[in-house]
Image 1: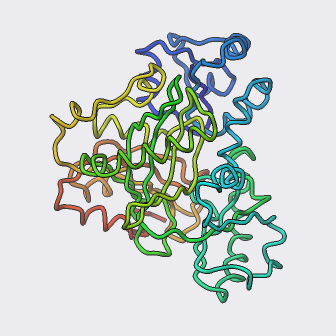
Image 2: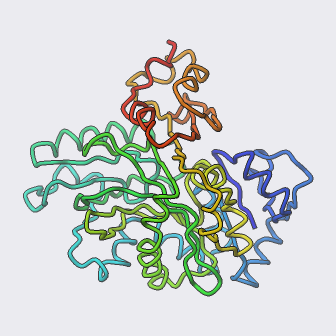
Length: 389
């Protein structure tokens, strides 16, 4: 069944729910977001009863905002505990630390960051909220001299976004400090089936503009990326699934892979694919895979068949975050049409209330191999040429 919550449910997800008649829980929030009465709406009471009586029932949520509903209504099941294993990055690190014994991490309350004895730390390092989302207050600190300035920056950032998402999604009470992982970053959507076997639905290269960049601007997938990393990522995820004893459980995973092929986990986001219906939808654009159907119907991609007719193209998700330095409340408009002209083959543009969420939207594109410059350009863009004040 489907549990819908703010901030966004894509037309593709809603169409999938309708065509498959997947049960969708009739919460007040879901009904306010989706007005189609022809969907297979089920009452909250029926959903609670169904899951409580059969914990093999598959639940997919589009948003971590829904964690509150699960913790409130399914507290007598194992699901809230499974979610918290991953949502809290400190708990997640504790879960897998014996598989990565050399990896350094430490949890510190926000109010103690300024006074922490930084001489005990090894630089470079990454600092971020223990419960976070969307690269909010995530920073790389290269040396001890940068420490205090970045802690001050974090305190300022916290004030700007602390009311943007529920506490279950972003909680800045505690931060995690962890060693900086060398290598390229990849995002993965997957699920564990009713036997506990992992099923990978996509792999996206999270491209950064520099070693200091921690933004979410460009994610790219392709046949070549899937072929190169599928096997080693499956092996890694199976270790995680076995440790947490996961079954019928979807997740969005972020890892780094170094030049030797060693995988180190960054974080795992439970019960969903990429936020704002992003990575879940891009699988359809890129490979004709409906990730929601695959999870809820227990299907496994036949990659050999999929790639027979797959063109040698790059498929990208571009997050149009407001990194312009311009306060969203002072921006008159964003020129989406001008943006689209800068890409070879835009597939879909999704506009977002940037005054509320600090993001102009999400762009899905197809790019020919050899034309990666359009992706490199948007990667470093401050987007000011599209902004009208």
